[in-house]
Image (cartoon, rainbow, N blue to C red; front, side):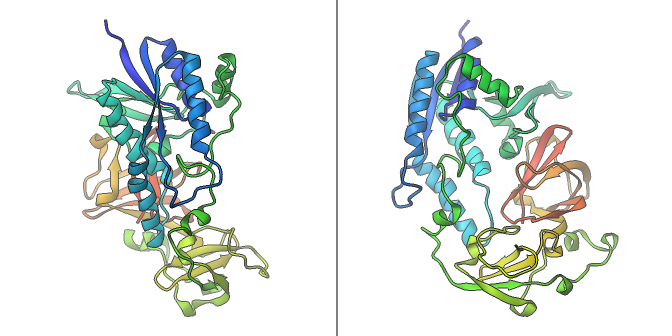
Length: 393
């Protein structure tokens, strides 16, 4: 019987290296593929070239494992689908998540299609998440995206935009392991990546300060930093009296609502909840960004991480921006669902209720959430299964 062919996305890190090793120990035909996703010199990332080192490490791992290895250049697709999108979102005053986009647009779309063109049965990555297959009443397979066994490394949130078709063709070999177990396996196998630090920075790009990156396309523009005092913030009526739309509303401040505290280089460089980079002192408590207005080029700030301007009870996602990993669980207008939800990676899951309407899906939390940010992804879970997600409006 012909062995199943698996193409592993070898990134040059320890996780994908061990994923390839584990598959190689099973009855699979394993091929390593390194994705080169950046060589655009018009947008400088850093003085070094992290992808060169990563590519070399991936090649050494493949040689050690005795598996075929090749590099594919996806830099054009990456620039079009990720980088250009990021610039457009920041310019519009939203904050995108490049890691979620990388997985949706590159790893599990472009890369998957390349793998299938090479007669692969599956692709595999080093993500800390798990997949489970169940069958419905008609005998059809349903693919469940589950949290990784290592709670500190769980990466299911980053895969919140995957489809059933993508999950069907994907394997997560290390999802049932703890990080320390992965490193021990790498050490035992004498893999060059065993002690390599986890990558930081933008997905596939490497270490880079985001403001430096953005300033190469989004030009600096001097504007005001205005502090909104707590006393100025209107206390809303009790939640039970508010509609879903009112609950999810992010209050917009005006130029005359507060005191000018300083200047900035461009409102599009800032995001809600940000503390660093304001370069404004002299206040009893640290200043945090509570809102930005890219049209008027104003950054609104408030003192302290408990400033009421940072908190909201709910958020909304447009129908078009709502994605169900489990389409069979999709809500129809008028329906609700109790879930656990998170609005950013590494945030603890929070109790919430989904409310579906004709135009929006509202996520109403039991407790107010800090720094809900337009452009980011909210993901919702049933138990340890990620069942859907959406781009926050």
